[in-house]
Image (cartoon, rainbow, N blue to C red):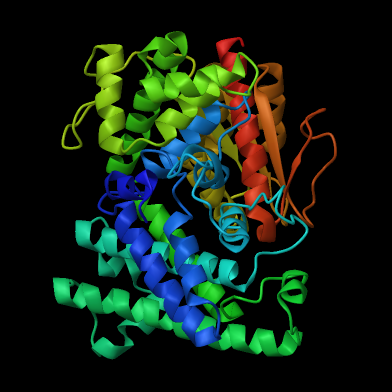
Length: 484
């Protein structure tokens, strides 16, 4: 709690507009302790992991992480989970006797094995063949609950989300059972009651389900629990399905909102400009970080970029904006209330344009929404054939492919590709556009449809793997455009 990184969380973004990471961390800790108590786990261990689990998240939250991951792609990469463990074992210093915070193995293992539906754990040096211990799994569940609650609370409080937009969603119906009436608007008190009810439903279901899974597993030791082929801490299948339903709706509304898009653009401009300026002239780094560079064990030229990345990753949003202004000697970022950001495009900040090809079936559209959200979060403008009248779709798409698009993402669902796929892909290949095929397991995918391009398996249970590979494809496109 006394580490510098913890105190900076209060000025760090989460994902959207109103939430800061101190509030989120405290809520994760609160939910985690409650779950630990109900499941007979170590409450103090859960609390310790909760305070540290997101220390490696850079300014501007997930938008900032995506930017640093792109900048460090060829220099060891950037991942906020790995950055967290580096902070608590190397970068933070509370004693002259040792680096780091002198945390126990169990806390460090819990940090390393922090994962979510979007983040896969990488526990290379801490028993990677084993799952997280019970307390680590509890922390992961508490984090998911807290984020869902805060996303919904932020959306409702800001007015971006209204109750009528959530009508028909099963979990929303359950939350409103106690109100006994249709809700069109929410007062502040009613909004708090809604969020409390959501957390209550999530926690109750998770405790009941986890106790049952623990009993069924028959495990009697930590090692055996970690050796199971599944996580024992889990919601029921029905609530898991309901959670995905409401999350998809929240993402559809929140992540397409102009304020979120602006925050992504702001993060990319600020962090890219700051990173490139400091790499060009490391003399602008504060003394501590210049010393870090001199004693770095990383070989050049990666050493400069890693130290600069570490420096930036430890900043708050406000500090990053101010440092960017100082080192670039210009006001390149306007306040949140402004309506426009003026910035000259460079290969690293250029907005890519992608055509998303898919069959206009329920399954195809569902996959397309998930992939489209991810592409937009990566700074990609997404175009689809749904924008055009059916009679003119083929010609319109061909015109787009021939002129303004940077790459094509092809989704092949269980019911096959779209009726226009062959024409679209043929045109894309003729125009030498990069094609990234995502193929759902069990689909009627025709070999050779995308030429020699390696296709990416799209498994609903491993969406994170799919999106990681898709991100690599996007980085490849950026490199092709920049000529590097």
